[in-house]
Amino acid sequence: MREIQYREALREALNEEMRKNDKIFLMGEEVAEYNGAYKVSQGMLDEFGPKRVIDTPIAELGFAGISIGAAINGLNPIVKFMTFNFSLVAIDQVINAAAKVLSMSGGQFSCPIVFRGPTGNAGQLGAQHSQNFDSWYANCPGLKVVVPSTPYDAKGLLKQAILDPDPVIFMESEVMYGDKGEVPEEEYYLPIGKANIVKEGSDVTIVTFGKMLSRVVLPAVEELTKEGINAEVIDLRTIRPIDYDTVINSVKKTNRMVFVEEAWPLGSIATEVTFKVQKDAFDYLDAPVLRVACADVPLPYAPTLIKEALPNAERVVAAVKSVLYKEA
Image 1 (cartoon, rainbow, N blue to C red):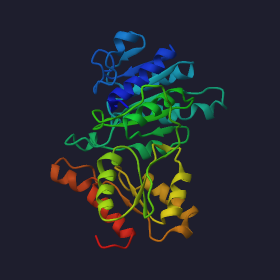
Image 2: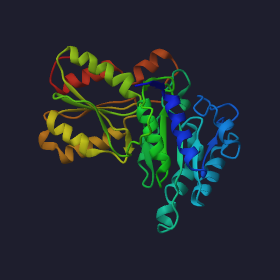
Image 3: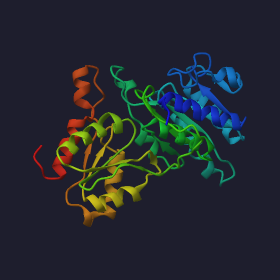
Image 4: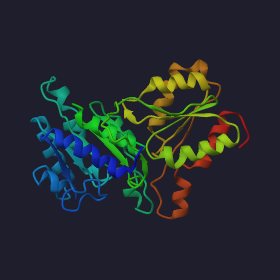
């Protein structure tokens, strides 16, 4: 099977859906003339023209509002934020308009819109440019939140998000655009709300999503395997809705769980999943659930402090050994 970059998988998804439906358009910062800050929309202005690939000012609240109005009136916008750190400027429109119009109109109006862009830490970009707001958006009824971890997932989930009748928050890790992975030539879609069992195992369940899979969890699993520990790895793919059944069925088999997440610990997705596991699989647990998350501080600038703050493979290995009552 061919291998393509994460950015190329996203571009294929956008192109395929826009060729099928002329009501779909892409709007955002640098998506047209500059081909996208991370070159996701490269060549799209030439193919679809300036009415469907639209450069915006640095005015997130304004163009989020324009796109929501377009969605309510029958179009299918894809809104690209330069980074989800800047989506906070537009969050009133996302939370109080896009997420609520279906409910507040008694089902008369839907809002088929995708808000997409990079998320998470990408090195020395400063605390205000290095945040993870996935759990913030996942907290809001009316939204769906997707965080793909591979090029294959990125393409299949973005195509499905574009077809979804509800607003979808589509978060792309800022350091993954150059990552390569296998993506089929033929068209495919991946369902929103269904987790992926990346690796089957019997000793412990490791749950994660986004870039934590390739950057942290899989290197940790490689080390654990050398030590004879057989971990099951679950990639949630979407964090609203969450596929609780897959997680709980895994925990009933392994009797232990470690959750790995890049975001801050308070109010995290790990907290929510852990609640469901203790509620629905309490009698199966042989150890407390542990989580590996970012330190509960604004991300520092110094590389040494960044390393200390973020999850890493060593912390995951230690957490797994802890729930297995093995010495780290």
